[in-house]
Image (tube, rainbow, N blue to C red; front, side, top):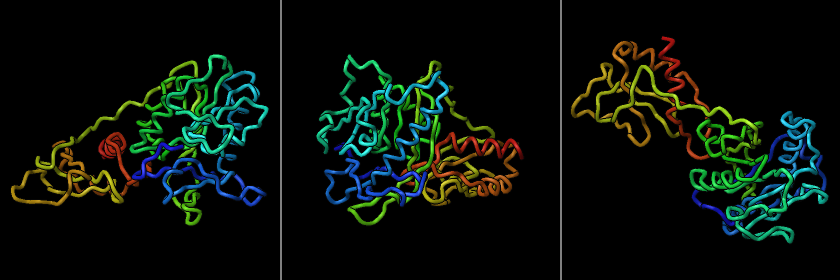
Length: 322
C-alpha cells in the first residue's frame, strides 16, 4: 500500500497468542505494504501476525451473540484494504469469498485500486468483514479515512490501529452504529526494519461490529474545582500535558497570583496552566502531591500526550475527594 508518511511510522505487530516456534515453514518476513516505496525504512511483519489477527476475528465470530445462530465463516465477504502482498488475505481459505485491494498490489490476486474510492459490487449480498492493517498517517488521518469508508458497507471492521484508539475520543472515527467488541494491546518490538533490527510502535488490535442500536457516545468531561487559564494570567499550577513527564504538575505560585517579571520557563506548548477555585486553593500542596502520585496511562503512538478529558477525569476525582 503506497499511502504513507515518513514522519509518522506505522506498523503491524505480533499478538502474543501462542508460541511462534510452533509455526513451521512460515518464518520469513511479510511486507505489509505500508512502506514499500520507502526503500530506506521498510517494515515487515511475519505471516503469523496476520494469522493471529484472523484467529481473533474467528474467535469473535464463533462467540458472537448478536447473530443467532452464529453465521458460518463462509457466509461473509472478507475484504482486506491496503492488502500489499496479501499477508492477511492469504489466511482466508480460497473457498471463501474474499477481496484484496491495493493501489500498488504485490500479489496477482489483489485488485489494483484505491480503497478509499472503491465500493463493493452491487452483486455482493453477504455481510462484509473489512480487516487488516490500514496506513495510519499523521494524527491517524489515514486510519480514520479507512475506517470511515469501511463503515459505509462493513458489518465488522477489524484493524490494527495506533494505541491512541483506546482513547474514547478516537471512537468518533467509527459510525455510532458500530460497537467495539474487542480491543487488545499488541506485543512490543515485534516488527523488523530493513530485515534486521526490531521496531516498536504502540498499537492495538480492535474489532468493531455494526449493531441494531447506536452505541453510547462518551461525553467530554469538563473541569470542576479549577479552570484553564493562559500562562500570562494568574494561576497556581503548571500541568505537563505532553512528553515523558506528561501528568506531572508544578506549583508556580502558592497564592495563584501574577508576579510581574517572573518567568517559570513552563512552555505553553507543553503545559496547561491551572487556577484553583478559592475554596480549595489553600490545599495546593496536597493537591499537587496527589496529582503527581497518579500514573496516567500512555495511550498514544508518538510522544505521550494527555487530552483534557483524561486530565479532567483525574483532577475532578482528586478535588472532589479532598
